[in-house]
Image (tube, rainbow, N blue to C red; front, side):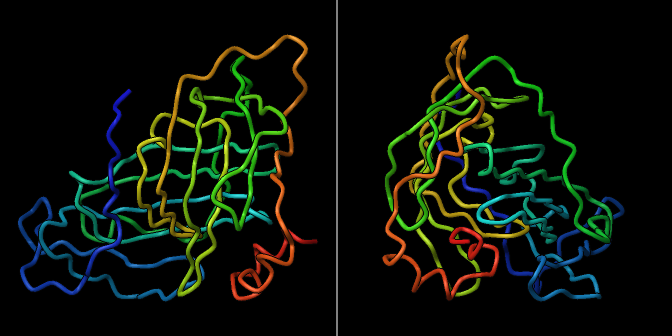
Length: 239
């Protein structure tokens, strides 16, 4: 597994001074939109080195179930495609699917939809915890890995929406692609990871219980002032 982190340059300036070109040689145009944010009904002209349109679909349960999409111009050489996921517990998941295309306005999306994910257990397990408002957490159980999530991840970073940021720490199962993230602009949140350390997941113990809820210890009073400024989905953490 590659050790280096790959920065996903998915959020770039869309007002071109020198236009990128599509496969026919004309200026490339893509839709520019993020769920819950500003969207342009008119496709935007891409600027070099952006040579593709990208669309990301996200499903997460960080406090509440959230679905979202992100559309933009992109540099295909700096963008990961396919599926990536973190599973920090039975009720704490992040699943993202991304696609690139190189025709004008090809990244259209009508309504965010739940991703078709392989939920079959793969026989592996990882320590699990999730602590919003903190930069570390200790595992209090295990999560049983599913599908292509064959790595155990230790993650520290920040969830961002608009001008508000919430630090978090987590442990759990992950796909190999997720271990390469440093910065990701996605359909619901922006993810800024200062640590994403992964190792191959061990086989699950025969008597292992099902996925732990994996909530790490945190002080309610210490993060309520930040959370109240954050998006409504995170308020579900305290219900």
